[in-house]
Length: 233
Image (cartoon, rainbow, N blue to C red; front, side, top):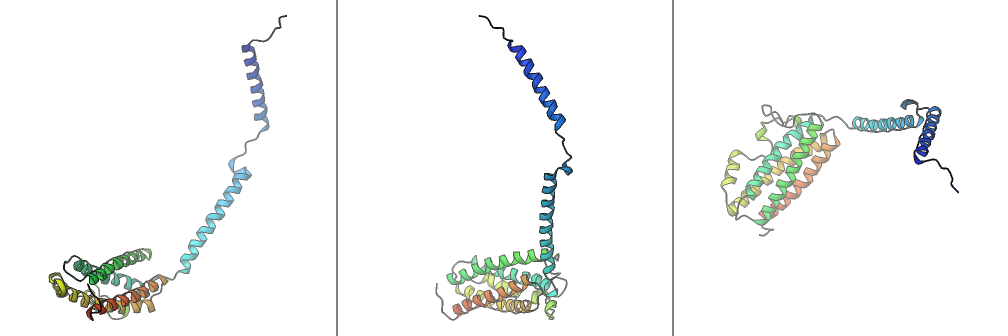
């Protein structure tokens, strides 16, 4: 027995018509709201604004809670940067020599490394404070301590003659000269750092200055032990 069935083209056409009818019904029933009237969008926006406001308030609050740097903060950072730069210069000069004492060379390595890091930190703090990264060399240094001097005569700095003698020194003579110059250099730096630790206005500078005092006092002990013959190699 033969059963009449619609061919495939008729089925496809019928499916298309049904799909179109369904789409038309959906389009008629669904209302697309503007983004600002969609409650989920508004909820997301409120959450984002609250988060931004909280973060911004925290940052502003932190800035307001940090005291402004005073003349001691700025002057110490600028002058100590120059002071440190000479210590690094002397240490690198000594490290490059051959035939010197191994213990003294190790101390020189530590000084060059540690004070180079300090220099970077001081420069970054000056940038954060919106201040020049270096002191004006046409003006006296140490004004922030009430004891202005030419910048090349800050406490503990080696003279040009001292530096030339260090360049020319060899062997044990270089050991002795470097150690003596660095002890004097550190003593001058400690004098400056102690004043900054007591009179700076920001916690960052106070902490940095106090750390310098402790670190350089420790290095002075090591250097004095060498002079006293308590170290070898």
